Image (cartoon, rainbow, N blue to C red; front, top):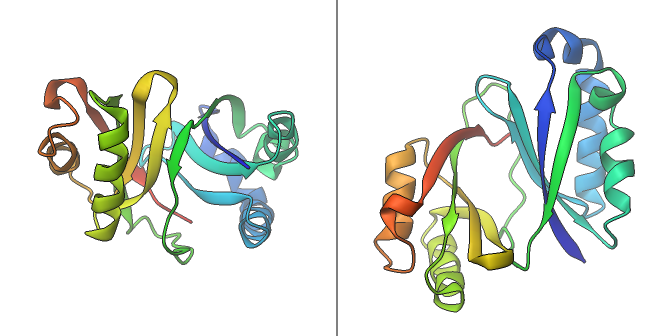
Length: 178
C-alpha cells in the first residue's frame, strides 16, 4: 500500500457548496476509513484547503477517491495535488469523527537533515502523544500531523530533536476531523 497526501483546493463558497452534500461526504469517508483507505483528514480552519491522507494500492486510484466524492461532484472541491510518502508513521488509533472544529492540530512541513533518524524521532513523538501520523516525501520533505493547535509548539517539538532545522519548518492549523 502507498500512503498519499492530497492537498485539495476549495471553491470560494466552499461552506455553502458543501453543506447539502456533507452527510454523504462524511459517510463516504467513514466507509473508506473502515475499509482502511482513509488515514485521516480535515480542512484548514478557514476552509480554503482540505488535507486528506489515503492508503491506496495504485496511484491511479487517486482519481476515483477524489473525483467520486460528493464534495468534488458538487464543486466544493475544485482541484487536488497528490504526493506519495516514501516513509510513513501510521497512527496508533483511529480517532472519532469530530465535526465541531474542536480538534485543532498543526501540520508541520519542511526538510529533515537526516531522514533515517528523523523517522525514529517521529515514532518517538507518536509514542509521546505528540504526533498523530506523518512521514516523508522524496528528498526527506516532512509532513507531520502534530497534536497541538500551536504551530510554534509543533515546530519546536520537531526542531528540538536536532533532525530538523527550526527555520526550515512551517506549521499551519488543521481541523483533524477524522
